Image (cartoon, rainbow, N blue to C red; front, side):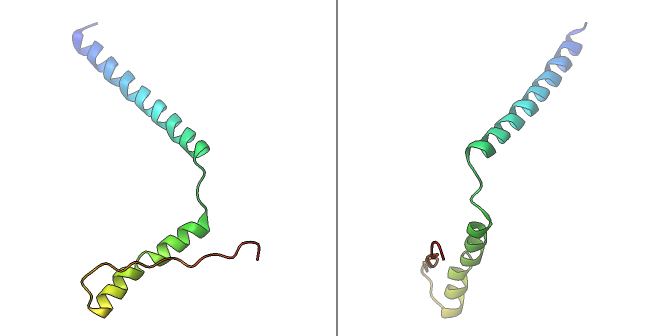
Length: 75
């Protein structure tokens, strides 16, 4: 084997190992940290643009903070 073949083999193994380890870490993170759910994502996306819209329509130059409404539990 030439030096070039050894370098190519090392690059191939490094890439393969990185893909396998990266995939395993991704699966592990999804197992350990559960997704927050669709409801939380929808609330975050619905409330997110509100401060910008309020600031643009009112002519304010500062920061507007909008708190999401509390959800009733058990209802």
